[in-house]
Length: 429
Image 1 (cartoon, rainbow, N blue to C red):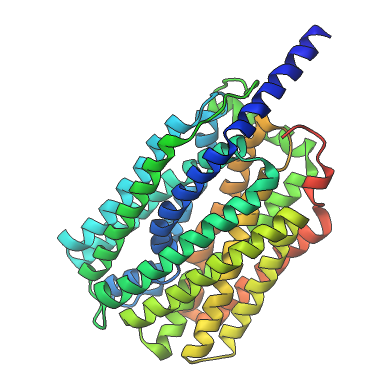
Image 2 (image 1 turned 180 degrees about the horizontal axis):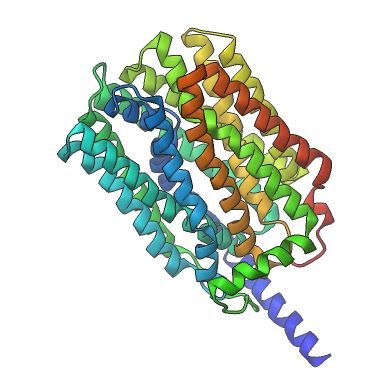
């Protein structure tokens, strides 16, 4: 009984620390996301990087697929490593600085490769650098989500992610348009793309530095410090004991296969519009602003009705936007498609990441994030490579139809087998 009272006191003390520092940590995460996401949206948007790889490879769809697949492959390998690095630690931020610094170093090298290397050498370097970037991203996806789960209560996460992504999107849209118009221009070359990615590096580096102002509380309990091999051996039991989470991560992986179409949206539109700086800038602005504005709605929906509904709604919008692209042409329809895809993918990413945090006990959050992220990124690695082959053999339309099929399967699995975890959960967050 004394031990139970001691645990309850420790938990109350922890929650008091979270509430006491909530406003400060909310503001710091907001500023970090504003600058960090602005930079990485330029890297991860389905416009600049696919067009750049297409330029360096003299129009090879398979090269585009390989480049994006390598990044996702890296992200698939390391989430469990990231979880094993931090799950036994009372504070995760120091590790976050180390991994986040590695990510930004890869972005810097991507920018410099286009300045100092020939086109063929730059293509090889970028493929390798994207793989390394993915390795760091895989770990960061675990570390920074764990950090947010510690300092932001569940009923405020939708508001934070919505507002953060809204502000970051406005900034990213402005930077994307200026980069497309003035750095890349009407005659794209490697130097213009490199300058755009160098700007992304500067913004993300400032965003990482802002996290020094986070007040990270130390939880009353953490997972035991075990070897990576031991932790991997525990995963099957964890999945058996939580069928809802198991169905969720499998559904998320299936839906993530829909990402196979992402690098090919801009290439399909570019067949009729041309891949000029203005076209890239305009469609990136449409993609980014849509994600920006919709984030407020996704966050509001998630806080009121749960991230499960936001997850399903984003998949439905993604399907509708992809189908619109197949049956339409011209700048106006292309802008509408990128608006829909931007809103849908942002809602999918936000809801998928936050939904993962709501299953099970707090001590198992790192490994749950790792499982969900690894399975998704394995799909994300296979998807673009498969999409590149499909695009080469059967055309872009085949890629889009296959993408829609996977999105339907993932959404159906969540709709049938996964209840809203927020209402079902009884264990402490």
